[in-house]
Length: 331
Image (cartoon, rainbow, N blue to C red; front, side):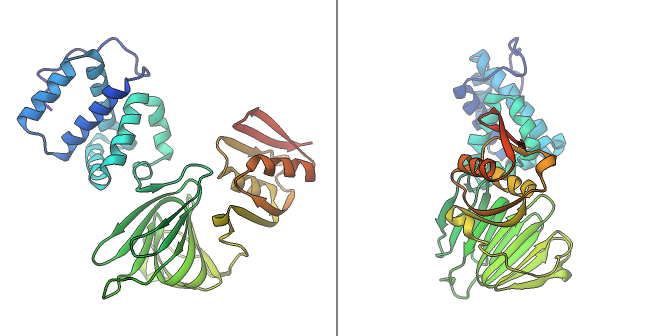
């Protein structure tokens, strides 16, 4: 970027907000810059925009900070990461960039736990949200809470990229001849559907697959030789190097898609961690009661009712710091 026409930054603090209009314009200029399609006239137009108002220069300087520190990676990697995201999903990229420029460094801290691919995924659900989608080939896809998925169909492959969360897939026969394989990729490996209805969930250090119908071929990301098949009524956990063997399918493995959680003799600590996926804010369990056993059928769309049921059936009390910060403690 030609900086000959830049102006001195206004006396502002790093945490100051940027007007939405200036943030969006700066995001658009930054995307164009990294796309590599700006002419000399465009560079001059950007410089004039920056010089026309102090808010513009402030927004641009923050945009440059994001370019250097994007995703908290070294500066040399920031631009390629940004460029690839812009090419993959321009609208989502613009929205995320505008938010980051407008809100400032506080939003960048959260970036450590929310990679760029999740922000710009084609399909996303918020905490507590579930969504059903029918893909162009007729495959039915259900996204669970806090899920991000990219859809990448081409002439050779039907591919989903699970960025985070959990999905239920009912594959449909490919209308194209010859039929294209249906592949799901995530951080830990790839899964090839073999006429299937199955659930995939990505955890921090591993992923799990539960097959309700058909079969799924699992290939760990870093060890193709460890490829194996998970059949009907089986489930498995795998990481980048190997699978952990086949287990009988947990009953009601797909019940979450109907908004229901079935539990039989689950530790309270595990149960609270599961419910927390569907509840905005912080939900914690005191270690003193974490070993209590929970059983029952719970409606995930009403987590307040779940907390009430726990307090009424177990020796617990719920301490509310705020509506969004709850701790379960001994009664």
